[in-house]
Length: 253
Image (tube, rainbow, N blue to C red; front, top):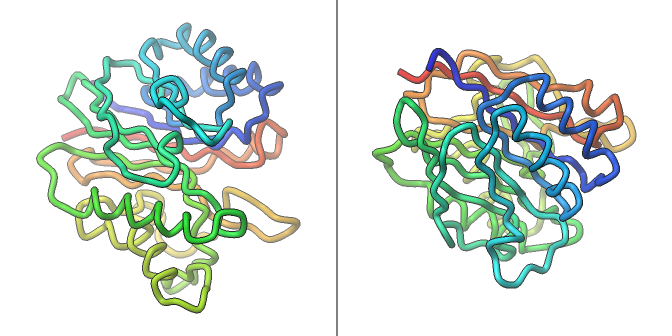
């Protein structure tokens, strides 16, 4: 395997855009895709379309979880066989995470696709989700790992590298966000975009009016040897989603 291409994208639950989303993904020829805000209708279209791109293995969280509160869930597509790690992340909404082993030609990779709910609508469930992710991943791993998704964090990043979380009266809130956004780097899960691109440039994956936020991330083990990571803004500006996708390319050691 000369290189491995991973894409994470919040497709915004825009079911009518699914054919265009599938064509855009196929054009980039990814090996692994993690999607957030996937509806049943989107899943049906994407699963069928992405098979033609070689992504013949796929999982949709709403199909493997008995009771789902959310109609927009997560899905993973892979070029290689996968094994689901059931109930791996104990989050408030299990359908917003998928954890699995992906059996690549270079060996098994632990892969996690996550959508952390926003705090404005879900309150402390956002922090409960961050803490659940951190508690499971903040430990050494014999296998290389990738964590990707829409984390609805941080609020801001400064040119000197400081990360500004959303503020609440309790310090638990900021600690919860930062535990994953920066804290997992101590456990070989650094922010790949920042590791490769540094500070600045400023780059955002989601906008509210004219204010950009970098909510979408890929964290990955060093042994996977990431050498490229960028946002695919044309998918957002082309109205396929309200989020830019994030894409990383690895050359596993």
